[in-house]
Structure formats: structure tokens, C-alpha cells
Length: 317
Image 1 (cartoon, helix red, strand yellow):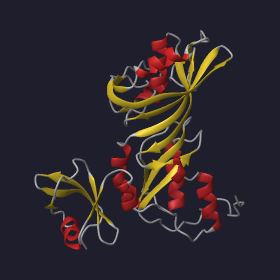
Image 2 (spheres, rainbow, N blue to C red):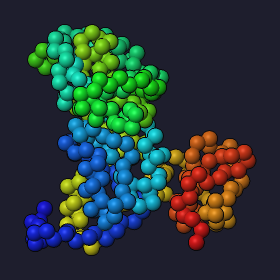
Image 3 (cartoon, rainbow, N blue to C red):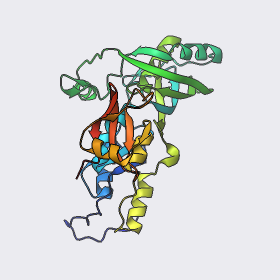
């Protein structure tokens, strides 16, 4: 990156404001999701930037960033299913259920049968009631659970329904006195992979915690379409007058929900907030209503024999 030749106290030049859209960032380790949003605000030339689902500082991988009006789509992306690659260490548990916490159990675990491990993992798939980690971002009486734990409070969170579609063992190996598992997890929004590591260790009687986590997919957003902050920063330095490249709202919505192609008349009616005929067998969930010009007009839902907008992205002018 080029050296900064600004005078002391001089503000950096403002970037051209990015178009409304979505950027998929490959979050680096050590950064909070809020850190990434701060960096993306500078690259996008606007403060109207948000993310779709927190990743812990230890974790890397897919973090979906919304810019401008596309931030209104983030609620649909946050609730989508997710996929992870992770490493679980058996034979040691920690206060945070990951490698950043203080050790609780350090008895070690070696000689484990892979069949026994797979059986225990299978019992943690499907619909589950999962107790989140006490250092999660869940709010308790208006404060984040992790903030209460850091303040010395004893935090107990209620179990929450989650769905684990896949909990696959990719590799098992002994490391000194522990056993490390490389796993793949596909799960619903709100599932904590750290809690899966903890619960697996409890089921095997060894204790367990997470040592590595990489999010590989959120809905249709994958690592293949992600860019690192270094890559985005280098591109901005090379073309300081160019706008940050984004996926359009229509492209972003199509990665999360079915698409309905609208006629000009339908697009106009929906942009005024009015409903249009649902047609045969409309999807039950949210639908992206895309106009003839490829613009995302609205997010739609079925109400009776009509589809109506629940979020208008291209209001009538």
C-alpha cells in the first residue's frame, strides 16, 4: 500500500459514494465485524454500511456487507442458512468455548474411536435446543452477554431452537494429548459452532472447544465471490476516483430468495406499494420482484390472492 503523504491532522480524501449494493468480504482473523464495517465505510464513501451476521474476531470468511439502500436487505441475508469449516479440540474446554477463553478442563483425549465421534456428532444434527455460549452477542436486559461476562457477571442463557443440517467429520488426528477434529457444519441462523464444539466434548466426556472457524457460505454468497480487505484496498488505491464495485440489490436478493420477473405494469403498481396478482403456486416465503430493466423493485410476500411489497427498494418517482 502506498505511503500516506497527508499533513498531520489532514482528513483522507473522500471516496466516491458507492452504488447501492452488496460486497462479500473474506474477513481476516483478528478483526471484529464492526472493524470491517468501519473499513468498508471508508472504501464505499458513505456511512450507510452494515453487515449481515457477526463473525467472532477469531473467525474468518464470508461477511456480507450492505451499502446504501441495500442495507435494508440485510435482515433477509442474516436469517439465511450458513456453512462453516471448523476445527474442534477434544480434551480441553474453555470459558468461551473457543481458543480465546481460559481453560476449564485440560484432561486430554487420545485414542478416540472415529465411529464413536461420528455417532456423537450425528446426535447433534437436525432440530436442536442449543444453549448459546455465554460470550455471545445476545442481549440480556439490554446489554450484550459477552459484555456482562467481561464485567465479571455470571451469565446463563436460555436454550434456543436451531437446525443443524450437516455436522460432518472431515479429519481426526491426535495433537500432543488432545484430539483435533476438522468438521463441516451447515446450520440455521442463530446456531453457534462454538456451542457445537462444547456440546460434542460434553457428549464424549472429554470437554471440547473451537480452535478455528471459517465461514464458507451465507445463503448463495460464497468464498469464491469474496474479496479480502487488502484486495479491496489495493483496488481503491489504484483507482481512487472509481466507485467501490458492488453486487446490485437484484443480484444480492437472488442469492437469498426466489425471483419474480415483473412486467412494467406490475413494477409500477408495486413501486406505489400496491399488490399484484399472485399467479399460480407462488412461493410461500419472501420473493425478489425484479423489473424489466433488472432493478430490484421490492421484496414481496403472498397475502391471499395477491403478492404485496413488504420492502420497496425502487419507490415510484
